[in-house]
Amino acid sequence: MTKDVHIITQGCRLNTFESEVMQGHAQSTNSDQTIIINTCAVTNEAVRAARRSIRLARRDNPQARIVATGCAVQIDPNSFAAMDELDFVLGNAEKMQKQSWDFEPDTPRVRVNDITSVTMNAGHLIDAFSTRARTYVEVQNGCDHRCTFCIIPFGRGNARSVPAGEVVKQIAHLAEQGVAEVVLTGVDLTSWGDDLPGRPRLGRLVRQILRGAPDLPRLRLSSIDAIEIDEELFELLSAEMRIAPHLHLSLQAGDNMILKRMKRRHNREQAIELCQKLRAARPEIAFGADLIAGFPTESEEMFQNTLNLVTECDLSYLHVFPFSPRSGTPAARMPQVERQTIKKRAARLRELGEKQLVKHLDRHVGKTREVLIEKNGAGRLADFSQITVEDASTARPGALLQVTIDQHNGQILNGHLAR
Image (tube, rainbow, N blue to C red):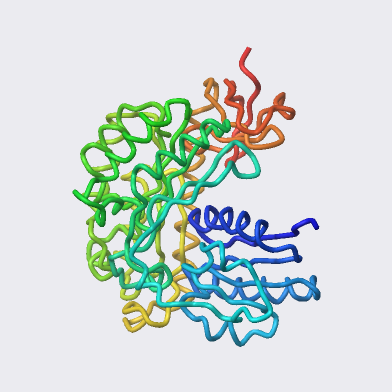
């Protein structure tokens, strides 16, 4: 019988990777129609979106088996267990175990254990995703830090690393299948190795990957903590052309007092220095960043420091979060900024982000760049710029093509195959 498994993935790149693992597990153990909602809990709106997805899935598929998992479920399993639309509720550890997807008549409806009891992070050998353009590989999970706004450690548990040998084996396997780009993912990526013998740093892992998977064209890092870039990683980012010249930095704010109240581990001066040093070493590098608008106690002057940080770091891609208090976090108990002020500040940040993106895209017009085709002639440059290629609509996903860039519309570049 055909194994009909559909996954709705919400949230981060790590969830995307884990959905791929779940897809394989569910298809190998279950022959019924199954819909899996892999939830996110980073904001209150993310949790609301998870509930909406569950209700819609049941409305549109009355006979399907519906399973909810992910961070929102891990953090608040009882509220999801109370939803009549769900057949099963799985925690973040349980969802990665193959036996969890072998549903029997006596299988418990709710299986969510204490995530902090998980101390090991095994690698999962997966095949290429639905296209061979880009595949995510988990190298780390969990977080030992306790930023005052963040609920995710309660959904992911303590930091734990996948051993280097398992990571290299997985990526070499993907490269052999023709995957053009691998993205290293984790909750706190730069903490990789802290729990392993000898406490190796992320730079060592990256070097081992490059050596162990020589046929991999492009390696990309997902969101990282700027203050924890080790010396070896900095050297590789500066000189190794197979590492994509793009970093998404977990900056969150540009004011030192707000950063202190967030319990971040860097200050604005360190963030600016890092961006300047990396750009001096590798001029083509592009930076993205997570930024929170309206954190508790944020004054207009403090917010202006965040705006200034965007231009001082020359950020090209902004991921803006209007602050939303998460129950159970210290920030929820701090003096709150008025909601309308938060919305206005988020809008101002996004408006600046749009101008920064235009400035970034302008640099490419008239140049010839390598493009990784994703589908239907659309793809990305190594620095993550989106592009459509007029005469590449039939190019296979994963193809690396030389493209001359003609123009852009403020968000996406447009070009043609280089002659």
